Image 1 (cartoon, helix red, strand yellow):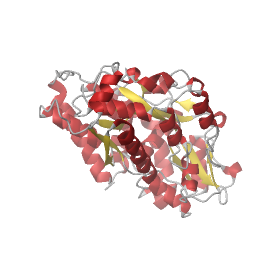
Image 2 (cartoon, helix red, strand yellow):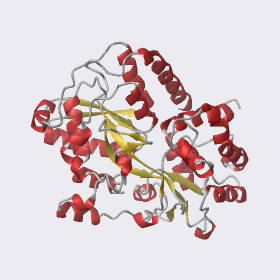
Image 3 (tube, one colour):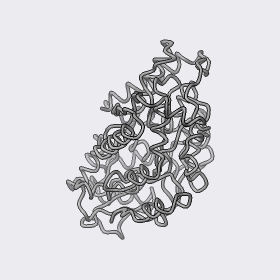
Image 4 (cartoon, one colour):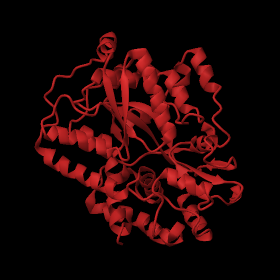
Length: 415
């Protein structure tokens, strides 16, 4: 999987260079006006929406299937999930279509997206707009005040070009049957000490896997001497200096990792299996309910519990975007709005289903919907909001791309 993902990233970079001379506007009429909702509903009926989304989780795939079935019944929509290993594949598809002059009738209608992929599409003028997300009927329920990440994606203003779908925060897990609570690390520095004391019992997915790259960003934010610089695009003249603490840390940590850092878990599901099998003692995910969801699915023992670093872990939102040349823009709008509905958001937050936190403000919901959220059993291993700790801001999207490349140069295959 690693070689496929890296080659996809390289292809994406080549296509972006090829298209750098093309104006960032598509020159195509923007159909499907979300401010005229009944017209959108009428136009959407009978459309097929090709929804490009990460397909690595059976629980998430099952949720998308449920949502698709509901969209069929309620709106006459057909939803086809195109299961991706990396979102960059979908971005590359849209880039290639633009390079070929395919400005209408594109093969991608909706993308699950955030971070550097959103930045790439926004920079190249590949997104449908302007400002469709804030015109959706359910936008009024989004918690933009307490969750500024619903309108800012890795420091970039979304400008209504993508609709928030769920919230995320980096959370660590351990099996309390094997690992005492009072021995758990509380910072990146503590984690390094813990790994040295427990060699072979920790690892992280190999970048450019999203979870593995997020772990690198957590370390970068904690270890850097200038966090404000991380909010800006990478400055190559300072990159070595800015990342020196990160790579010195990894150089010290890798020999103490699972398989001595010569091999890495493929992704979060692989890490989860290794925790269940007793190969690892601490793992992590970008979802506070992931441990409870794993317990509910029988994938983790019921003695697994969650913890965070008291000074903060990374937090962000993930989104849905519509390519500028999508074939089923109206259908994509309708489906994105349904996924913002209290019913769909509540089901998504249920750890028995997925466990992905909502982006809705509960105080804006009708009483029955609010009570339904409050009645959710978030699971024995899910930390309540007041124990999740501060959310550390994501660096600018360019940092993820750059540190992935540097990680590969230093530690990738053949090194």
